[in-house]
Length: 389
Image 1 (tube, rainbow, N blue to C red):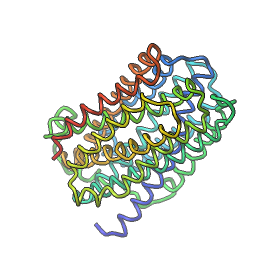
Image 2: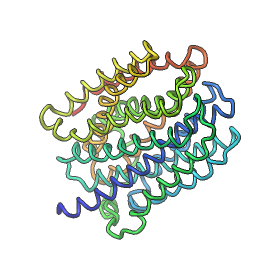
Image 3: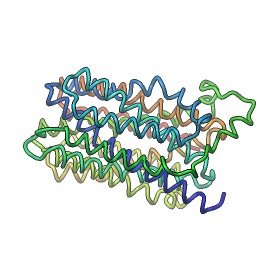
């Protein structure tokens, strides 16, 4: 591959990833705040969190097959426009039913963007550069998440523990999605990168066959644990803020610190992996994330929480790009779309189950107790990541 071609497709994909993740990280906390405005408790917020993942769980494998036929560009466009339209509609969602439906649709749009972007990275990068390129990809995602968290907190309102209205924040998410889609829409250089490989292969890619690849199940579990932990933090930190009289701006800042720390760790992931080895970094980051997330139960002091989240965010930022590389290395080129979709399916299963359980725990024992459960999940994933090859 020529470096110029890599540069162009990579920059376009990273730009799209940053803007769409920014839009999503405006939408997710604001869905929680809109739910609180509608009178939902911790259990109800957990149900909303689960609804975000319910359609992606059903569709991810089909997306994995389809991306090899139509190309990544169409997934980036479809997912981006879905997030855009959903942001506009969420600004007028005034019932739990409508909020739940739009939450599920937003999750599906987000899945489309991730399938397109991650498949692009997997098939246009050289295997020896996976850690570096997936580090860049998830760096762009963290950048978007940091900016989105801040914009959501500011645009959602600064008075009291709940914003006066979340409508403005949802409109901001639509603007971010629109800007993110434009370069993909008007460029002609992003041709299908894997259709030829799929067409040339006589092997019909099946999920049950791909999942048998050595190490893939361990990679899927580790990815799901890290992804679900971040997801629960995004959903329940606003509720934690309400319980402890923290404004949306403060909560948005805490979420932005997490994203910023993840962004920093991902920027240098390629070099860190080269020096210390991917497996060693993955195990150490899992251990640090376990300790820090568990320690959140010990304090309600904002400065201490921000310090803990800073360290936790750095550690959590490492797991996702390394599991992307792990999954890509464990699959043949024609299987990567399916393998990536299986990874995203695992993530969404975790994001479906965990918020419901966390909501039940938060409703009966308080939000702080959720952090202990997340620490236990991360500890299990750290043990599994010892199988990283």
